[in-house]
Length: 153
Image (cartoon, rainbow, N blue to C red; front, side, top):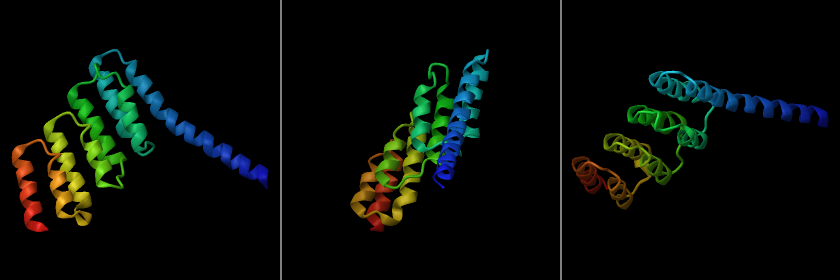
């Protein structure tokens, strides 16, 4: 019986390695594309096609590995969107807000902060709600959420 469990363990280990390496192989293939736009599209497609096999940590770690000088800000933000909206599952507002700050453009940061608020608004108190508003970049959005916090709690 122990051979059976050992065989199952090895099978799962190799299967997991195959999923991880398919993403890594995809990134390697994308990096070898001759034209810059093909490389950018290839990297973005790797994240999109392999999002089901990624966890949040690997997704964000892989962004750091990609040669960002090769990737436009738009593509970089789109890849971060895949990690934030499609791969990550946040357990706390704090972890969600921390990842929202990885976006580089103000509009994407604010959108992510509002998404965090929407996910956790049912468990926030007024003080926590006001704290969330401090993460917003645009003054009008910050003021809108502050007003909501003051009027709703």
